[in-house]
Length: 599
Image (cartoon, rainbow, N blue to C red):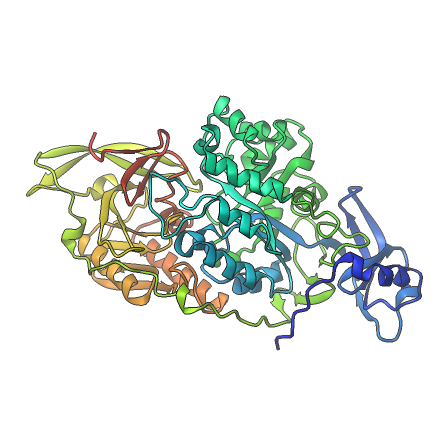
């Protein structure tokens, strides 16, 4: 059954009760007895500890809370297990899970995530400020802490793409007055910052004036003057590092280095060496996921997965826990509310029998037991997205095989090719010699070169931009189409066969958005995403099962990349080097300019 969610009261409203519980003058609502206290402030593990909870907050942590328990007090026996603060994801996008905020919460609560800092710039690129407000309002209905960062770059790279909407300084100022906005989302337009663009610096200024945190995104390997200028421009964290020198540079300049382990981004192992080998102070390192596929959430976990991975790289367990609890809370100015088991904090607590393997056995959020042994105990009421959030795929006309023709009068061309890099967001700028037949450039399966098309889907222009991509390894006639195409979220189609490319694209227009794979003229998998073409309105488990079938269909078509769909969805992300595609053509992100397809 679902219950009415009560917002946690400010400390000022419950402080008297907290004090009275400690002194035995009021009964605690809940007492957890006999646990090992993982103290993220002192770095200790303290045995034989009790916790008393009142009004969703911790009143007392110490050796004996018996004096706070009365007949009506709920007793939870920790039975010698570790008591760990609820895990925080310092940077992530709900839309990457292909589900709503409610369903994402349903998926991650059993894994011990009790706080998330979400950047809804995916829906902002489709629906603008209205879309951000929808996810902001939904987040406030849930029994865990979901804070929203106002998207900063919509479109992500003005002049290189056209999104379905735009965000400006006035939008940022308005959002800073909303109750659940925690800061500015990742500042992806890093050239805009180091070139002193007025809008980008204006958004940062509006955030700082509101006393909120400015999120960063410096996706360049250049750690020279552009990087230093970027830091001077205000961003306070960054999750785009992939090398140990990236993490070191960010921390030395006063930023928090956010190390991500998402479904397809494996950036923790290399960067954590800044702590384990170079000896940097771990207080300025934060663990996050960035993008997690729904299948990953169901089968592998969420922040518990990142935590286990970090420990496996040689971090002491308590240090790793600090990186996804206290460090995150301090970064966002929420230390008095989140990130530790200490008096006054929200009672977000995990019980686990092993810190390294980290089985999540009990999840308590705001003093309520929400999950046990991987299963939700509380249902979550759904959130109704308005009609304006749906039917957003506007192609203008049905596509045919000819929509994907690339013409040349030559017998052979040398073409620029987007090269996929497994488990990383950057791509490579490759080149290949391709043959022409009857004036049309041909794909080359022997070189693993497929065709990629970006189909405009926001304004029904009917425009299609065509190019080439390598790395997916498809070895049959097939095509994968998706209306999730970071960040402008047009439609991306990658295929070895133009008939299947047309079938896949038209199918998504029919269902209102999503992902589909066609092979040899037949639909092999479909994930419907009717909300902005990004999110499903079904339960998270159903979406995860559909996503698993999609991944299997990709494998059956010859693709062996880890989480290849996530790689597919980023092929239009024109703020991460080296080569991408947008509705304006092929983009050289190293130079931040549209480039020719043929060399």
